[in-house]
Length: 198
Image (cartoon, rainbow, N blue to C red; front, side, top):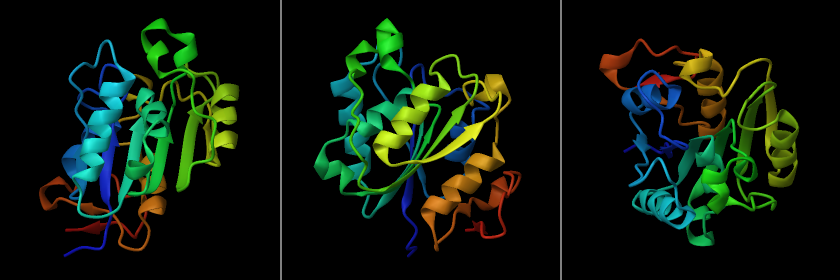
């Protein structure tokens, strides 16, 4: 039995398609589970939070979140009983729901410190959230802030497939147990020597 936390992958608006780092990690990491939503196109905050919470609470131990875009904002809206299970969170390219009408149900964004370690990764030219806004989120949430130059929305369209930097940041949140790769998927880039195979 492993002491590793489960990795909970939380996609954003319209889901993360094939080739996206979230999709690749879901396929290749042993301890990963991907959240599914009933409606990826017209998201409801209550429904999304319920799905994420159900996924987290179904795990037998602590979890580390790997969220993208609206998945980051959804993570900050989780209720205390769900938050208590979170060991850490990698929050990548958070959305700004106040700038896009279809995401307005997720506004206002909570500006309270998160009670777990978090790393927020933002790009200098993300079309869905200005880097200054992402920096304000990081300060409010108490997140370590990683700025990527000209990284777009940090998705497959901007050239972030397997994304070794993201995997290394996830590894730092998982800690001592390391990340475990499924044996048949050794092609995932190993950003650190501490990654293990199952």
